[in-house]
Image (cartoon, rainbow, N blue to C red; front, side, top):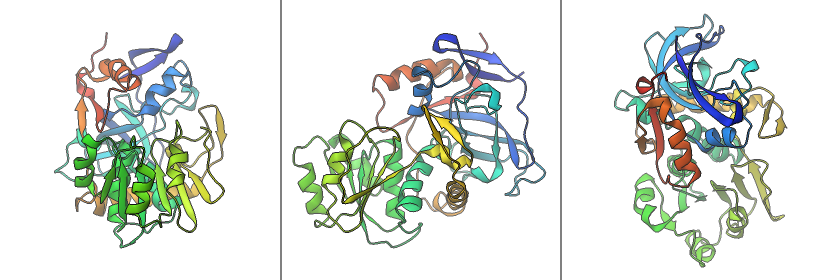
Length: 350
């Protein structure tokens, strides 16, 4: 029987055997080869949102095993795909997180990736890229890439996973991209497409950003969204109809009256009502439709043309047996400008 990493009582994690998940007419049954870790994974466990019996994890890459009779995309068995699932849901929902040898996902919400890209790298793309894309194009209505926007945009927290994709996607949309990060990351972010980089700890960072944007900045995505970052970002926004995208819904932020806050959360792409991090959220069919469009563009244009590159993958050995180590590393802020990835074949049953 296939293995999965199950949340048990007292926030413990255990590798256990489970039956194959059931798939519907619109779904793909996917054998997972690699999973990538996101902050939401450890937070679900650490803060008790993932109940006993649930499976956390969102990002995966794998191979199609079965195709639902009404599945879109003309997928065939054996094809390599990547995507994300809603990890950490109560087991009664029968929706498995990515830390499992098999997952089920709507065929419209996965994407193919080029043969030049490893499955390990592909697993880093789904969650962070769609989070950035929702903010840039669905919420702030910047032109969908490839495009020639000409607008300036600030990516605060450019070396985060979401920040790296926001830089690349904004550049693909034709924006002048300003990013913040520690100085050690500036050269790398410029490789990704940032036109100007500043140290977020610099006491003059607000005036530096204003000068770089010619005091006419109207778009920003705050990839940190806590500890006062949003207030600092808003201080740089002096253009007309200023907007800031935040990525931690439910966190109290001070947004001045001249700035419109656009809050994004990747879980809305699944198109259903949900209860996440202690809050109820209504279904957003428009978010699901946007994600379908974006993943198709990612598969057909953005990845093949090199307009979007994956995060740097750092492998943790042991497959699912190494996840607790990875959680601890992320909780201790030991991860920077990289994505922890696990190889499913290395998982062993205790």
